[in-house]
Image (cartoon, rainbow, N blue to C red):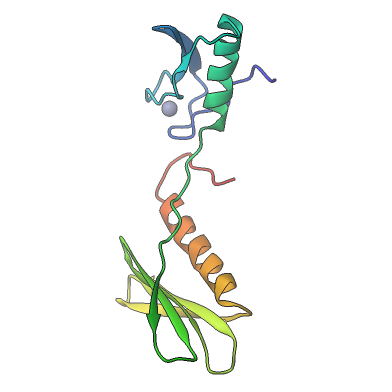
Amino acid sequence: MSNKLLPCPFCGSDRITVMPIRDGAQASCKDCCAKSEPMVHGPNGVNSTWEGAHASWNRRKVKVKPLKWKLAKISDEWDRFSVETIFGSYEALEFSDGTCGFSSPDLCEETSVEHGGFKTIEDAKAAAQADYEQRILSAIEGATNE
Ligand SMILES: [Zn+2]
């Protein structure tokens, strides 16, 4: 296991330290106080607690929650899914030519932007999710989405 602690996913600082806590160890950022999960000494001894705190810190990253699509039937043949987000609603649907697409909120026009050409509704939903994540992460400094 590498002993190198990755930079803070929240503020970008590389001033990360592992500190003893009651019955264990915990990594934290000296600049913004972000912390790893606390690791408690187990049967494998104190060294494994320190390694665990390292590993826990290095797993930390910002993750955008998946959109929770709701099915809204248009007809027996076509399904339409929609989800409300903090900046408007996304819709994923099948078009009459059999292709699929999604619409994303357009904040400037207070309307929506259509994106087509997807083979399946799941592809369209995945593209909508990527669009949503890109918007959320663009507002967070030091965010990575790997
Ligand atoms: Zn930080």
